[in-house]
Length: 388
Image 1 (spheres, rainbow, N blue to C red):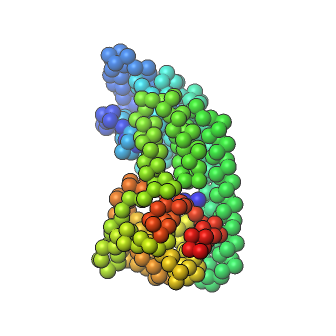
Image 2 (cartoon, rainbow, N blue to C red):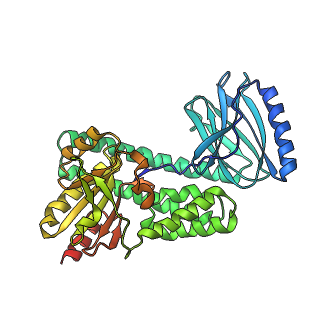
Image 3 (cartoon, rainbow, N blue to C red):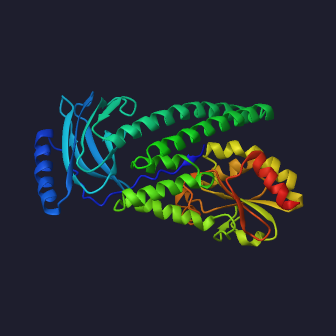
């Protein structure tokens, strides 16, 4: 399990942002878009639905592009909660249907589809149905299972927090970590099976993001090949193909990109300055619960091998310095720490091509990558092997 940076993207379609009555709104949208479709030769899709408990609430249709979601239409729902939109579309894409500020669902809509969605606006994400869109149905199927797994993982996180704030019992911590690993393994297997079963569908573009890239590069390449073949004109697909290419920059055997950041005292510490040691580059943050769960393992590893030439170079994605420093002290992380305090805008996110933390890169004495995202006994074995 890891904290994941959303890969949702922003469209270049202009925004119709003035709420109006539903019937007038439908007329404006349909008339304008039919004209555009006729001019550009694009296929239409229609989105029709009904949301209960939504009278007087604003409905937003948002499309994903390379920078996030952008609103392309909005309206105020009548007492019946019904809506109808018709738009031109070139390729399959991700759309967010949002009611108010906090209720939303994700749909994946392709050319020529007539999509019907119904739901309850009081808890839309858990209470909706969708028809007429194969990828939207598959998305709902996958992420319903994913969310159930997250409930179990959240329960473990809460238990871990209580233990860390009270007894810090090593046996209990280890038991939680083992359960955490079992849940993560089960989710990984489910994701892989889902990708294999639906490799030619656009939905796998989001499913593959539930897998850590390095141990699952085979699946990243499968999806890359599918996107290139089946959706060559999709901006989101093109962005993913570029991401896989970027991941190859930190392939096993390569020299990783340089990192030069400030430590807590404001001194610049370069990653390259540690050449000659076996170095674990650890990307983490104080707010990342999976990262904090891994801290006891790193502490044991550091205490065991530091005197033999092992070092940890931790790069934080924190944005609050006090939170960063408190986590270092609380978890007793007595090694090198650096940060730009820039959250997900930290420069290394792009240069190292990761979308979730914790993320680690293990370097040998020559500064070459010999492992990525190794954990627990596997990491300890690799470090011992290199130091021997």
